[in-house]
Length: 185
Length: 185
DNA sequence: CTGTAATTTCAGTAATTACTGAAATTACAG
DNA sequence: CTGTAATTTCAGTAATTACTGAAATTACAG
Image (tube, rainbow over all chains, first blue to last red):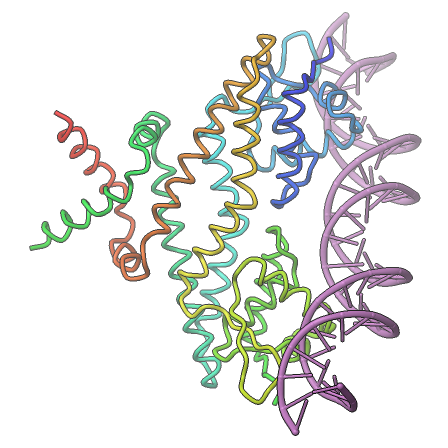
């Protein structure tokens, strides 16, 4: 039974395809993943091929890519030799994986490059200035990274509490500020 | 006087070029911006052309792109008809602009697409499930967006306080949790 | 207003990335 | 172990994106 792509689902799949191509991910991979997230049952390569109108080999490559991002779960159905893939049921898990993988691929190499460059002695005034800015970049990126890592530690339940809290994070930070300086004295 | 590209600065410029191409931004634009951030004085198109070994027209296009991201400041030097560009002196300003622009280009269209799709009535069980997931996506993305918007409101000074606070954000959130539930009763 | 330096546009081309179909490999039912 | 279904690899090609150089436009000093 071929999977149905209703106009609504198709629109969503196409949108994430477009968006995917604005990120590092290509259109097809974006489409495959959207399809998978929106579909309750695991999908096999042939179903994807058919639903998206792409070649079998392209589907295979897309699935490999998604595996390298650790965004899909591979599973087998007894009596069927096909491989079935599904996205995690918890969207927050997906988001956490995305954040982590992007950090590994984009942030970590940058931090390590910056650290390396900061080790060399500046020869000129120009280099001195450049190194200052590299130091600032490094510190800022590292701080933001720490921040997201903290947030990633939260589980779905805690997260939805914060969701309900809404946009009062500013107040919370202010509160913390007072508390923190108070506890210091 | 042609601007000097020492090995250290060059290495950094090339690195951000590579990284840029993993994001939506292309290599040249990444290189131009790295060069600009590391350089204290404003740069004109010819200096960029020479320093990066690219064509004059490519430099022009790159600068246009950076202007559309609102990442550069255009200024004129009296008695010189060239246009000079510089990056903001405060890195946090740069980061905030990047975050905001990416939100506009990547997040906002997705949220609005999801909202549209959530308006239609699900015809089948399949669509019902798909819509549930779209709703989850929408809520999660919106929450994370709110969060970053709050953080963006902080100025450099407050930010560096948090930087010193280090990786204790988890504790702060716990603290908030207690306080918040306490103030409710 | 004029002349020219600076910038931008754009058609053509280079470089890169995505995709296909055929062939090779893998892996499982029997 | 065998046969075959499923998957992957990969060379060739299509599609996209980046870049250049020439021509057009802009904008300013005088």
